[in-house]
Length: 66
Image 1 (tube, rainbow, N blue to C red):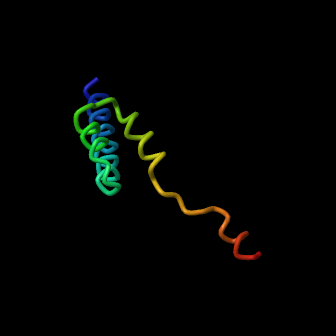
Image 2 (tube, one colour):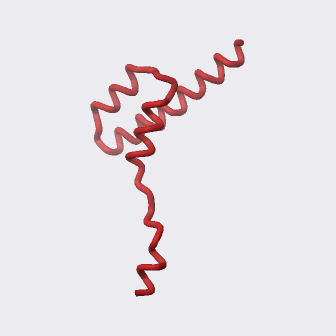
């Protein structure tokens, strides 16, 4: 039981720190404060990171050949 609690705490810390870092990088002060106040097992943090993280374009090689 204690191991589960430790794992959940580490899970929450990881996702909160990562989301706060991305929110501060994107100048999203409201999201930054939200992530610090509400601890919801990393679910909002994961959604925020998924939607806000910049992904490289996949079709670069196809566009270069044209």
